[in-house]
Length: 200
Ligand code: VGL
Ligand code: ZN
Image (cartoon, rainbow, N blue to C red; front, side):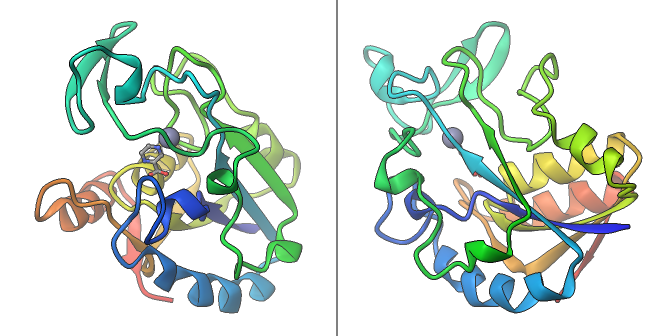
């Protein structure tokens, strides 16, 4: 059984959003076209409390892009984004959410970030995504959404680590690209870990 994982296609990651991914809105029609072809579609939703410690605004003298140690984990600081129940945390307006079979919310713990749809960044707490997939005999996942260099990458790497056959669709994702080349570097990491990168 194969599942499509639609990662964080939320307003704050679209152009004009708080943590805008360049060209992020381009993934919406691609994903809308893909979803009906999958028996199982699971979306993830970045869902932070307003005081989340990944927000630069929570740290005196720090700016977005700075890196700090957060409970023993290296943490890039971000603009405030995807605050629970805000419009920015909502799925993209044009996204066909009726195609979702299930939604996994992540990043709810104030003290630890969660890029991957499977685990918090310290791999201590699972989100329930793995159990959800295994209960449905999923052995293969196809990953798309935002952003390629963070949540898509870490979701794919955890899927590989958990033994799922894993494909990332490069035309159905876009990168933040804090540094030039982060998109290609993310795809290289996924390939090196045993994943497939292809287009839809
Ligand atoms: C993401 C940074 C912070 C993502 C989420 O969805 O890729 N990136 N929170
Ligand atoms: Zn976040």
